[in-house]
Image (cartoon, rainbow, N blue to C red; front, side, top):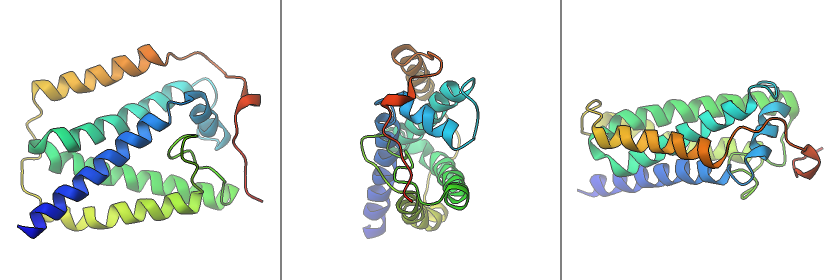
Length: 178
């Protein structure tokens, strides 16, 4: 029973982390696009689309972890792979550019250094790795409501934050720590 409560707390913390990360990158979304371009992942041609796809992924994972218990194990696996991918990216940034003042993990709302973000990811990953084996529930069975929620997230993100092209970067407050 005690483990049951702890794993629910962990799932909610992980879900809300993904949701808050996705939402915080929206204000302004151009700063997140700039971060993608400045870390040489892609060019301005594809950064707006990649930024929105990342946001869609984060919001989808977060909402599904919290709202749909039958597929939690499936989305926990996706969340752990996503955190691993983000951690590998942060490792790349740390090696290539050093410890940046803001890795944009929580947009401009909550500046976090590259090292702090990497530590955060490791802290979020560790319990999930142990939990995945003990978590009960199906890893399949996506239902109609999940499809509707995913589709709604996609439509809202592209409708409210349309792809506009290269933003004016002079207003962005992104810098490196020397």
